Image 1 (tube, rainbow, N blue to C red):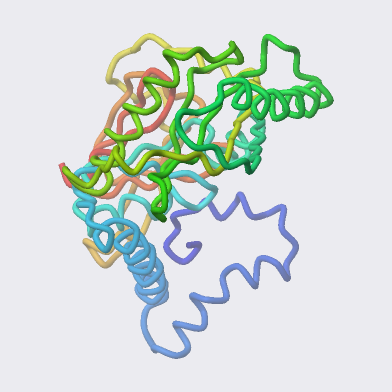
Image 2: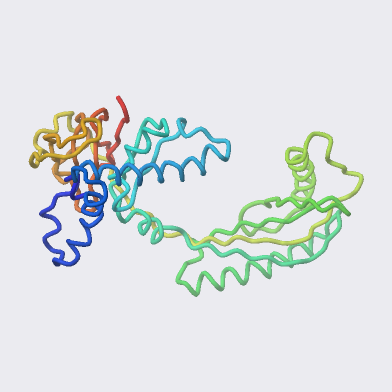
Length: 316
């Protein structure tokens, strides 16, 4: 990316000479092997990397029956925003969102995700189910879940319990998981009646109308319980829109290679820290943040929303 001048070369001064050499080596190798101009050679490497990312998204969407053109691409990671608007154009995706937390977004999710425990207990019951036996099985699982979460420092008010049952028609092999009323309140006969109806309805939704067979009877195979310890979530404040003018965020200008021109083009460099919600501008442009670099291609349009996410409309 140094050969394309997408990244600011001065930002690499903290690296030692060996590391800097390793960083720019791919462009040099391409120059040696292809006997081509270095920016064009590096652009080829960049294009191949983007094509590979595009193929991976096709596998996760088109090959599973989803049309990527109906989605917005959420691009995070340290290098993701450098590539995102290029391969989204290839996929027909119209908007890219780069979050405020880009390079640490995965870690942010990890430390703010609820703690989840899942439990299971086998016990074979045949309908009509023995209510006391149902209660006893869930009581054992609930006691273990509370013990585990309280040992992690969670208070009773921060613990959420969800009970469920793996059920099937008698002598059948297809099992379905049915949720019970949330919480830990004792189950009532009316809850069981609803459970029988819910199972029949879900079975026919899953395997086709008329596939249910109430006369066969129903049976429980496994008791399940999910216990959630709720953690406090980050509070990202919504900001008021400050206007479209982004001139105060302009940091500098430098030549950057864009494949539309197959040449280095004088490009505006924006300082993310000086951008305000509501600011917008057209490409070509580069947004430099403390954690990543965002490329706005010549046909694209960038906008900062109320949560300081950068939204790029592709090919507008």
